[in-house]
Amino acid sequence: MIEPPAPRPLTEPEPDYDPRLANEDLAPLKKQTWSSYNIFAFWMSDVHSVGGYVTAGSLFALGLASWQVLFALVAGIVIVNVFCNLVAKPSQVTGVPYPVINRAVFGVLGANIPAIVRGVIAIAWYGVQTYLASQALIIVFLKFWPATAALNTPTFLGLSALGYICYAILWVAQAAVFWRGMESIRRFIDWAGPAVYVVMLALAVYLVSQAGWENISLDLSQGESLGFAESIPVMLGAIALVVSYFSGPMLNFGDFSRYAGSFEAVKRGNLLGLPINFLFFSVLTVITASATVPVFGELITDPIHTVERIDTPFAILLGGLTFVIATVGINIVANFISPAFDFSNVSPQRISWRTGGMIAAVGSVLLTPWNWYSNPDAIHYTLGLLGALIGPLFGILIAGYYICARQRVIVDDMFTMNPDGRYWFRGGFNPNAVWATVAAGVPAMASVLLPKMLIDLGVTTADYGWISDYSWFIGCGLGFVALIALERRTPRISISVQDG
Image (cartoon, rainbow, N blue to C red; front, side):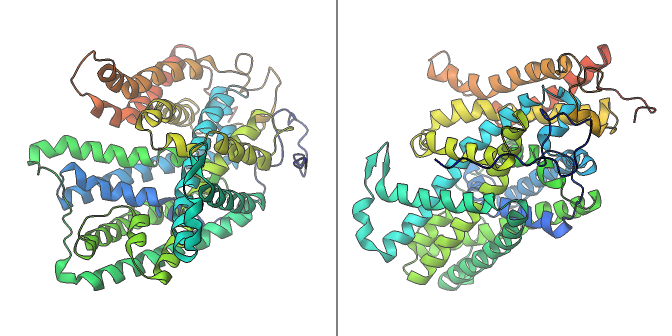
């Protein structure tokens, strides 16, 4: 068995950096070189995915008119843009990743709480995204090598031999990109995001030419049309859906903003990559989806299925491989890098950034995502439960940095186990942050689990599932308020002007 390489020591060891808290990957960066384009490309890789395509197209099933869907998409992504700027600044200023900046709020040991929660969520979604990409690869195999159809029947643990082959190909490809380091990842996402745009445009042009522009309708509303008053809560739910979709990468966006040369570069990249990019991508999605109606006789909101229906080998090859690249891009930036830093933070000298990422990759296979992804209950009660904690963790970090610490952080103290260190708090934990997580996390999780659980148990027939749409906002707001209230009663984070 080949042992993973040991974590690299700090290039220039800081005398006060405790080895239990530091390695080269977690230490403050000495060079921050990413430009606005690099941040823009990051969001292109995150937005241009099968999940983003389906999410945008699915809003029409809510009974909303086109302008209402467009408003919900724009409003949601503007909120995401504002929150990403907020979470980006502390990591960009200090040059440290998400789990490390949390030490200034949760304590040098308490920071493992948000790190582990985010890391586990990323593992689950890493497996799901790899599985989705493998489905696109299966289409390519079946089209060009029809004999592989014999391998496409479930055989072991719910997945076919062909499914395992395609999953393994993507697993190895993603691991190879990741293993080469952050600079290789940057180059990959710089290329992947624009490449997907080119193919999306080509797909839209092809379908529109087949359908005829006069047959394209931008109103894809399905189901019963809603009146204006009735549509308001639905629009709010759609806005919440957009925010929730981006809540994972938004929480640990500091893992990327730390590489930016300036906070201004981050803000420019976010503006280009979120509101502007997302708006154009959404319009492109609507045009492409609307063209499927006259071309195929039905509305198709999944791009993989759209490509599958095109009976042209080149289109299937290009489209299939492109959506594979798109999914690999979002998987690496959203679900690979996060657990790499998160798990390395738990034990820096035993777990390097690369080892942390590989733990996530192996864990994603052991979860057999192909079995539970198609089970709505499994997703609701597992990922829903964990996902509800993202809001509280976000709110607590923002309150701790902007309100309690007033944007002042003593970087060296985030790397010391000295009880006299600013972020030792009580035994390495900030009790206020821990209790704020409980106070906000319990209601947030309840908002996700209780409405469905009460119906499943036959306690009530009333459907209050809409509450779960706002679990991120509930958790974020409660976490923000709870930490401020606890810190005002027993101040622990506040830093004086002399200290800062």
